[in-house]
Image (cartoon, rainbow, N blue to C red; front, side, top):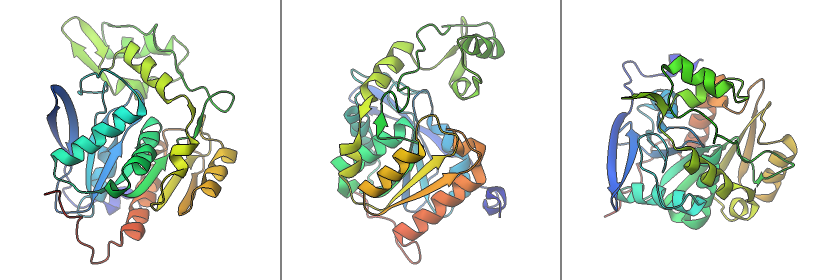
Length: 288
């Protein structure tokens, strides 16, 4: 059955909100409802709203909260872009919303934030879904840094902005254009190139220790044509961490949630049902 047919009738898009973290704006989407929480974390250059289709499919089953992580989307920049800083933001968001613990899903860089969070604050993470993220974020396994320093600051139109990005060797600028907005002086991207470079460098290296340091039920999703997570490394990740399942999305690239949205939603929803014991389960108690 397709995700579209699984979607509850009239399921609305998650509502947009923001909160103040010591003077820094953190924007997030929240599908609401008295349901177990899924905290969904996007990757570099992304925005929380990429999880809107998933939130619609899971409506009535799970409350999906998807922040624009620091320096991305409508959220403010920060003094650092370390993995630990991103994880601290996730905890602060849960605290602000009175949520004791949640299942955590992360795509790409967001996957590394998710498994770091599971290791640093195991009481806050009930289950873990990592979508196409490696633990060996280094050469020669992958190219951990995409150089965006020469990308245009402004362009006369959204299409012109995309064409200018693609002129820098990007085959398809569609993912990046999700962060494109019209400014008074033309079309530009919500993220800052220097921030993205600093963040990518901060995540480069061997992240295996963070991955091995948690024991929650975990689902590792790998795209068959991934440029980031090889089959060899994925199998290693399963061997090195107990309670980890691996699902490969055949025919898909790195953005597997776009290439196979139905399969992605089914895999995530079914895993959460199993790992959280959805049958008769109550939502996690809120933080007092």
